[in-house]
Length: 280
Ligand code: PAF
Image (cartoon, rainbow, N blue to C red; front, top):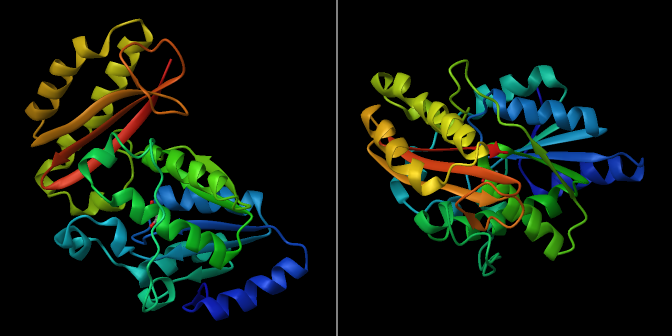
């Protein structure tokens, strides 16, 4: 079973030895409830690094609802079993005092990129992410960090933050992993009520069709009403956004007249699902 370290001091002692030996250290930051998407990040990290650390920390600062934080799945033992065959060197699963010790008073905030999409519907969420992620980078001393494209806005925000703060880490984006029916893997999928699971696949189906139409020159505003109606008909309670954004800046677009990404967030069975695809 993969060793679990719980303190910064223990982690630092381990990483210092690796660094002295000139080894490249990779980190896969997670909040646990690991699935095949996380394991694909681990596989990429193993291919690109000499040492791999998986962090597991359910970061309270990035939840904007106490009940969401409480409901978030915590499955540490199963997580350790899942990573065991992958040759991960260490799981770093700190307690809250290792991340937010008494008196902790700092918040990292990225402007611009965080302002629309999930940022508009989850106030404070990205500040929570950009406060914990640099701590995980600095505590692990990672040379490379692996993030999934499923959380596309998070990937852009974290990349900006690391560049702006001169953190010497390479952010490595990894493709979204999907179920056979197209549903993007997410730790939240286990919370979907059984009778909603079939409808969940419509999210990717709708995204793919709208993306194809946009690639053919269509205008988003002319497609979004029907797309949202189709999701509601499939059982979704609410569509928060279906937006076309420029790659890199996340500037809003109506037509895919440059590299673009189509992103969606919608609620199904009380669970918030997000997904995105490349356009053009
Ligand atoms: O994507 C996640 O699981 C989290 O936002 C992260 C990057 C581990 C920070 O808590």
